[in-house]
Image (cartoon, rainbow, N blue to C red):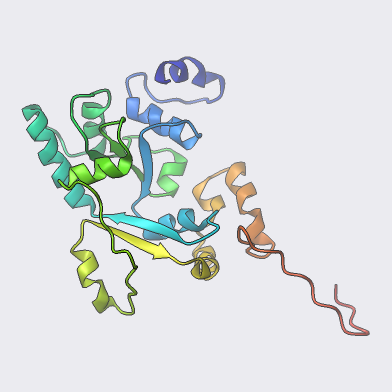
Amino acid sequence: MLREARRRARQYLPRVPEEDDALGWLALLRHHGAPTRLLDFSKSFYVAVWFATESADGDAAVWAVDLQRLRDAAAARLAERDPAFADLAPEGWAVAKAVLGRRDLGAGVVAVEPFHLDERLAAQQGMFLVSLDPTRSFVDNLASTFGVERLAFDEQPRAFSSSADLGDALQASIVEVVLPRALHRPAREDLWRMNLTAASFFPGMDGFARSLLYYVGLHQPGEEWEKPQAAAPGDERE
C-alpha cells in the first residue's frame, strides 16, 4: 500500500512526505480514508467529543488514555523484547520509525505522531495509537500493553456529579466516558459556541461543506427537521 501511495500520490497532492517517512505516509493515507493501523486520538477531550457525537445514532463514548502511563508501559514492554529500545528517544516520530515494519514485538500499543503536522492534525490536536500486532484487535493490543488479558469496564456507567467523584477515574490508566444520546445536542451546541466544528477540524472546502448543517439549525444526525409553526392570521413573517 505504501509503495503504491509513494508512486501515485503526486498525481493528487502538491506536497507529500519524504520517501522514508513511513509514519508521515500512513498519517496522510489515514486522513484520506485508507485502512491503516493508526487509530486517531486527540489531546483535546472536546475534540474527541465532537468526533464521538458527529454521526452517532445512539449513546457514544470517549476513551481517555493516560498518555504518560501508556508511554511508560510501552517502553518497558519494548525493552523486554529488544534491549535496544531502552535507549530509544521518547518522541513519537522516533518510536514510530523504530516499530513500524517490525513483526517480532508481540502485542502492544505505542503512541506516535508525525514530526511534520499537516493542517488537519494540527487543527484536531491529533496523534495516533498504533497496534504492534496487526493480527489482533486494538483492544487486545491495548490490554497487553498494561499487562492484562482484557479491558474490563463496569457494566453500568458511574455518574459523576462533582469533581470530587473523579478521584477513582483519575487513578485508572483507561477510562470510558459514556455520552448518552440525550446530551449530544446540547454538547454539540456548546462545541459550536467554542468554534469547534467540521470547518475547524477539516480546513478547506470539505470541512466547510460538512459544517453547513449547523448553519441551518444545528441539525443532528437522526433528528427530524423542525416543522415551521403556523403563522397567526395577519402575521407576515415567513
